[in-house]
Structures are given as structure tokens and as C-alpha cells.
Image 1 (tube, helix red, strand yellow):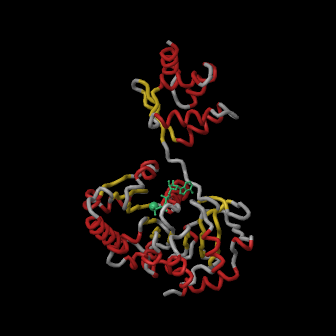
Image 2: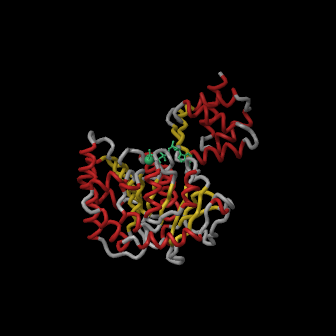
Image 3: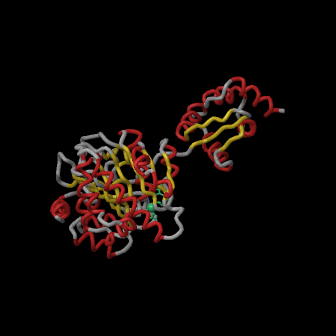
Length: 365
Ligand SMILES: Nc1ncnc2c1ncn2[C@@H]1O[C@H](COP(=O)(O)OP(=O)(O)OP(=O)(O)O)[C@@H](O)[C@H]1O
Ligand SMILES: [Mg+2]
């Protein structure tokens, strides 16, 4: 079953590597934006729906950027492509992004009874981190995967990708699952894409890698990991040299689409995340919630060419992003802004004129 990998080896010898300073061109700009390519700095889009199969394997050493990549992939797929996402969250790292996307975060005890409901949400995660021991987590993970497989078998066969299941720290799931291979082999028939991320390549069973039409390689831990990938033909010496030079957040992405069938390789300079921060502005009964991206955009539009956003971001950070309106206005006055700047700014942030008047009066008292 390693034909998928071995056929890439041929391609590896003729395909780009950073030493050669060339990269394949990707005419198709559909899919989700992940960052810019290393050589020509072209925007890179990954269209999960167009992959030869819907599975993605992410490999890399600790701290290389796997989880960061997965969060960006999840958020952009939910926001831009209406793809359903279920995350089995081993370390409790996905709550923020799932909540930001309007999804439900279930703890592992709730998950036992209402798995079907959880999994049918547009985006949801099951947080395993509260379970005390690794053994307990493994047992629960195995049960969840069995439920997922049963659930899958009850679904209609589906040609198009409808759902992505994310298994970060995949080696732990693989260790505990009875037959994770079934998810890969059969998932595509039911329109389910499995996205795995793991540190230790030798722990990822080869079936997982050979079934993933897209692999994302971050810097690897040690020479054994490189040797493993060289051995199965996933990379050549040239790629190995380039991967050894990758810094945190940059990766090599290799993918085969239904059109090309052959693997194309891209080095991405830095995976670009999405800002999932949410800020609150509070005054008496008013409690505004504003997404970080919008807060920044509005601030920069009002105070173009200044460092006001930087100062507000620092100030808000020190308040855990929950701003008391009067204190916030005092802060704005303190950094040299005037009433004629502050009033239209607060209005643009969504504060009513009555509240602005009250808050301003209190702030200058
Ligand atoms: N593309 C990036 N841009 C900005 N920061 C990044 C990027 N990638 C990773 N980071 C930062 O680097 C740190 C480690 O990243 P991350 O948690 O994704 O690593 P990991 O590969 O999942 O590690 P582990 O295997 O230990 O879980 C985090 O603080 C993350 O915010
Ligand atoms: Mg991680």
C-alpha cells in the first residue's frame, strides 16, 4: 500500500527544492489561504475538496507549528468553505478557535452520551484534557473513534467532502484505536477527511501516510525521522536539506489533486493564522463584543499611520481584553487623542451616542 508514496519519489527527483530556487505554479486560487510560498511569495491556497483523497497528514517536531497550522486550516475551512469540522482535542487546545467559530466545545463526559449531536454541529470539539490519566484519555479516545466509525457506516455514501475530523497528537489516537485505518480507507467514500498531526513519524502507521493525498512537513525531530521519510520515498535528499532549514511556522506541503494526480511540493514561508481574539467593552448594561480583526481594522481606519492600535492592543492585553468603557476613554485621552477623535471611533466600534456621552462625562470628571 505504499505505492502512493513511492510514486512521489520519482517526482521528488524532478520537483522543486529550495536549493534549485524554483517552485511549481498553482493556477487554481480556490480553497483556503495558508500563507505565501517561499521562492516567489505567491499566495498559496489549499483546496481540500480537490485533493485526490481528503486526508491530510501533518508531521513535525514539538513547537514547529502543527497545531497553529491546524487551527488556521479549521477556521478558514469553516469560514470560507462551509466544511463541517470535528476536533478530538487531546490537550484542550482548540476551545478558543471552536468558540470563535460559533461551535460547541464538549467535555469528554458529555461526549459519551451525545456524540451524534456533537458531531453534527458545523464545528465542534471534544475536549479530552480534563481526563485525569493518559490511560483514561486513551480509553475515551478509542471509544470516540469507534463511535465515529459506527456513525460513518450509518451515513450515506457521499462523493463530496462534507466533514473533516481533526486528530492532533494523532499518534496517541492511533495507539488507542482499534482500526484507525478504516477511517482512512473508508472515510473518503463517506465524504470524511481525516487530518492528523504528529511528532513522531515512525509512530504514524504507514497506511496513514500512504492514504493522505496531502502531507505537511514541518521541521522534524531527529535523523531517524528524516531517515524514515527518505526510506519510504516521501522526500529526497534535496527536500531533507530544505526541511532542515525550516523555521517555526514554515513547512513543505506536498499534495496530489484529482486533476494532477502527481504530488506537487510547495515550501510555505510562514503559515498565516487567523486572529481569534475577541474583545469586550463594558459600561453598565452595555457589553460589546468585537472580533480582534474588526477592532484592529476600525482602529487603523480611524488613526491611520499612527501606533494607536499597538498601544490599544497592549492596554487591552493587560486587561484580559475586557475593557471598562470609562477607563478606556481615559486611556485614549492619556495617549493624546481628543474628543473629536474618540467620539466617532467609539461610534464605529458600536457604542450608542447616549453611552458615549455618559462615558465621556465620567472620564473627564
Ligand atoms: N505560523 C506561525 N506563526 C506564528 N506563530 C506560530 C506559527 N506556528 C507556530 N507558532 C507559534 O509557535 C508555538 C508552537 O506552535 P504549535 O503549538 O503549533 O507547535 P506544535 O508543532 O503543535 O508543537 P507540539 O508538537 O508540542 O504540540 C506557538 O506559540 C505558536 O503560536
Ligand atoms: Mg501541537
